[in-house]
Length: 171
Length: 202
Image (tube, rainbow over all chains, first blue to last red; front, side):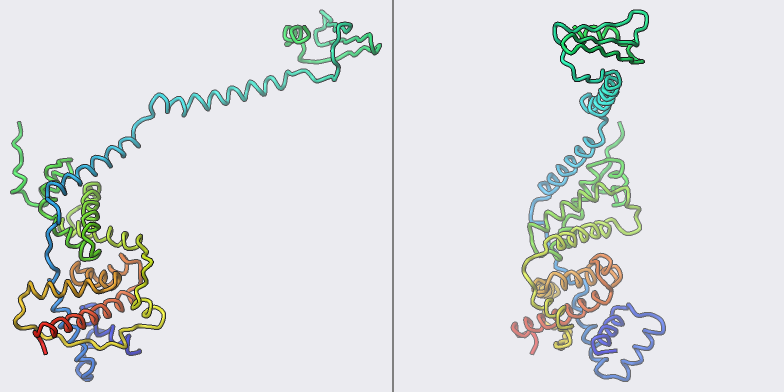
């Protein structure tokens, strides 16, 4: 144990932080070591001077003003707390529920349209092109072009559901 | 109509119960009773009047918000002082001042400086009133570094144990003991100096 540790042990004894056998041991050491005994006495004297020596002070502003500051701060904090805890307003409700639902609906619509969009045949339709749909069998589509002397027959299982749309598309 | 309680005659626990129920007037009475004490603690640690006032106000606001947590294990003023002390320690941590305290720097870089200082003898001082002694102690406290002053204020005035101080300051018990020892040596030295100068001791 070095000198510093010994001093701190003596201080702990003065402060009553040592108890039981350890306190007894250090009290014994004080009896046999004049230097330690003197240190103990000096620390005890400083402690004695400090006890209850905190200088009383008065708040440097009026009690009314001090209270008004405190009460304003309390009100302000309570208002903020209430604001945070308040149920969602109409706008908040819209943001929280309607917009996400609308987003999901748009996504669903987009995916549905993706499924029913016609494949791009890479053919630009001119005035001399014609498109024939068989009436009896709606899933068969025939395309003839006079320029290229070519006919294309396209079979589509979903065509029967989209006949009107196809008519519009071709117009 | 229920009779309005005589706040000024009520005991602290009764006022606390009323305040817990939302009675601001009861709380105002508590503020009126203990505001100086709260301010003194803040000032003792911070040594800055404006800051001590602000921290005192904050402590009262916190006390209002945490009244439900007060169950009377300690007295109401003691509980309040714990709140303001914690706020002061938070503030000291926040400040992280650029100013380097040369004594602390030495202590931390080259070992405990207290080994190189003698503990002064301070016998009971005749011819000095308690009030005069308090003023000299207060002046000496102002000359300590924040860390040393905080430890001695928490130990001597707030009457916390080593362990409690270590927890509050976020340090080890050994560091608290070392700082307290140095603070006492420095206080003894400063007091002896001022008492000698005033011809109160030889």
